[in-house]
Amino acid sequence: MNKQEAYQALVRLRMACSLCVAHGYKNQAELGYDTGEVGNYSAWANDLEADVLIVAQDFSNQAIYVRDKGLIEPRQLSEDARPGDYSTETNFFLRELTKVIGRDMGLPTHAGGKGVFLTNAVLCLKPGAMNAANPAKVIANCGARFLRPLVELIQPKVIVTLGAVPARSVLMAYATDVPELAPLRKAAFGIVCRQGPYHLPNGTRLYPMYHPGRLGQSQRQRAEPTGANGWELMKADWRRMNKLLK
Image (cartoon, rainbow, N blue to C red; front, side):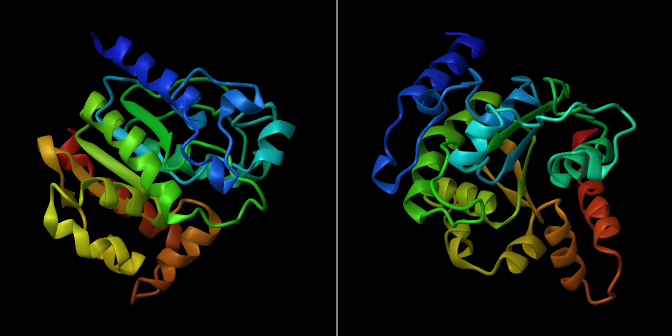
């Protein structure tokens, strides 16, 4: 089985998954507008030869997913679009960060971004509010059944996690194989970020990063004793990966 065939098998497993139905979660196949990718965000960047795997949080809740017909970006955008032109500013800032490492993902209206694969820590769509927390069991299920197999399939040099939930997902998935990661599963997110990067099997490095949205930028700024600008600090954090990626 080649890499593309293995990936499609993982996609089919995701389409049929019902592990979290007791928590009210539904997958793309149930709600319609299925992307045919392992995760909804993967429709933006899905290079199976990528050396950078970016793991975002959950994609959306069920109501907004259906409203937007499963699209990452329902608005028409041009290359000169600014943060406020996007349906969510996070997508603008995420693209800008991929430029910092020389792997511009392009606009989120179509697949692009050679050298990058983008996925979510939680693949199914949650019930309730957009900011509702994901149960630990849901995060663990997705990490073990989909995220770790995806990492082993792509074998990236770097995994970048965007916020606390994706970082926790990767740490949970590898805590047994890398025992020194186990205590970090319940550590404060700021500590997890400061102590990174972390060595995973097969030479992959885990770089926990703050979420690229405005709140994440504010959190990054508060974590810096100098009080430097959060967005500039975030870009500097990403630049640390360039030595490994070149």
